[in-house]
Image (cartoon, rainbow, N blue to C red):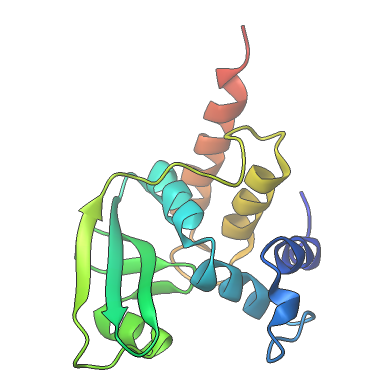
Length: 164
């Protein structure tokens, strides 16, 4: 398994985060957070759904001053939203994306988005790195034994899928 520095470096390049002047490439957790809060949220929500069975929710908004925005998350049984930062809510999403209170934030249940940037196969570097992110995030729910077991079970199911 790759370490967090290798994974962050991969996302830094793949998501073209080198264009973000305010991002330190050596701040590995910030790089990973930026990748999944700016471009790869659909893949993150997909894997989180596959591992946990939680409902995917697509958040959308339209800001007349700059355009359309979206962020994919999952919702747990208590109604909490989960993204790469862990548990959040609509206010946390508004704050992160600087969505003004006057802008309507839509939260629609959706089918898990199909991964578009990798194959659903543990031999694919995109899949390996996405699993690696969830394995290495140092906060709840990702750092719990229950979540890690579910992630291990998911990986095993993928590996076993290709055994004749």
